[in-house]
Length: 430
Image (cartoon, rainbow, N blue to C red; front, side, top):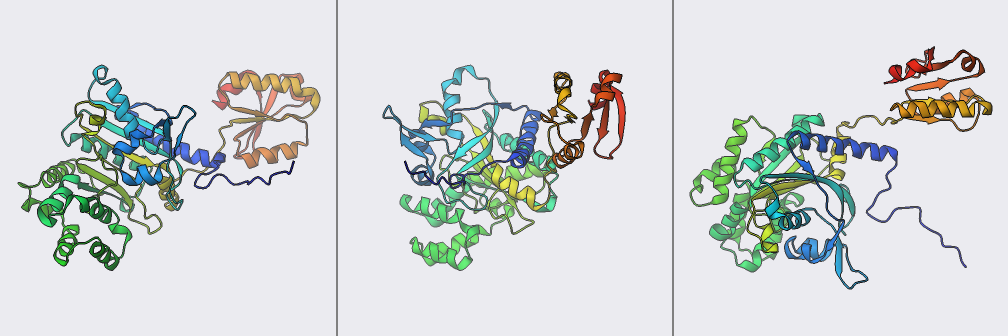
C-alpha cells in the first residue's frame, strides 16, 4: 500500500495549541470566569452538537446557510456543530422553564464552529464566553452586563484609551426603516446588512452599495445623516421611538454610574436576527491592528417563542477569545508564560531512582507540582533543562545528602543552594 503524505498542519481555520497557547487562553478564561462568579453568575454547558433546525429557525440567513457545519448522522437526522450558544441556552431554559428561579444568571466558556473564511480575528474553530441575564425586562440587565464588561477590562489592565463599547438599539433601526426610509419588507435585511458593514467600507463604496440595493438619493442622504446621529439627537424622537427612549435612559444611567468608554453608534446592527432591543459591540480604538469587534451581544426577549414558550426578557453577549488575544497581544497585556511545575527533582545516578521516586511522590501528595528526571545524566545538563523550562526550584540529592537525611534545594531565581530536611521542604515550597 502506498504511504500517504499526511499534512503536519491542522485543519484550515483551526489551531494547534502548544503549552504557551493554552496558558494564554486559560489566562483569558480565568478572568472571564472569575469576574462572572464575582457578579453571581453560574457556569453551565450544552452539547457541542444540536439539531440543525435550531440554528436555521432563528440565527439568521448568513449563519444558517453559509457558516453552519451541518451534516446528516447515521440515523438520518440533520445535526450541526454549534456556531453559537444562545439557541442552546434558550432550549435549555425552555425545557426547565417551570423549575428555574428568575432572574437567571448563567455563563459558559466553550468551543464553537463556523465555516467561514479564516482571517485575523476570525477562525473556524474558536472559544467564546457567553454570559446572559434572563428574567429582567428593564435596562438594568444591560447595565449589569456592561458593568461586567468594564470589570473584565480592568482585570486585563486594559488602558482606558484603547477600547470602546458601542451601543445601539434595534427598535431605533426599525424607526429608521419605518418612519424615515419607509422601506419595503424585502429590502430591510439588505439595508441592515449594509449598515452592519459600514465601518468596513469607504464612504463612496458605501454610498454606491446603497444605490445598488435600490435606494434613491434622498434615502441615501437620510441614512448618512442617521449614521452621524449623537445621543442628543435622539431626544427629538424620544416620544415616537422606543429605541431612542431606551438608549437615552441607558446612557443616563451609565453616566450616573460613572461608566465611561461607551459610545452611541447608530450603525451597530448585529447580524443575528433574534435581537430585539439594545445591541452592543466592543472595539479596539487605540490601534489599527484589530479591526474586528472583540465581542457582540444584545437583548433577545422573543427567543423562547420558537419552543412554544412565553417570552422571557434576556440580555447577553458572546466574547471571542481570538479577538481578545489579538487585543491583549497588541498592548502587551498577557502575562509571561511560566510552567506549572514548582520543583524539579534531579537524578544523580541510577541507584537513587527509587529514593527520588519516593521523594517526588511525597512532594506531589503534599500539593507540590513536581517533575522528576527519569534517567541519570550530568547535573549540568539537568540544571540547564530546569532553567530552560522556568522551574523555580531544583532538588539535588546525592549519596552524601541521602546518608545525612537532607536534600539540597536550589533557588533558580538567584542560584543560591542550601540544605534542608525533607520534612521542612513542603513549608519552604508552599
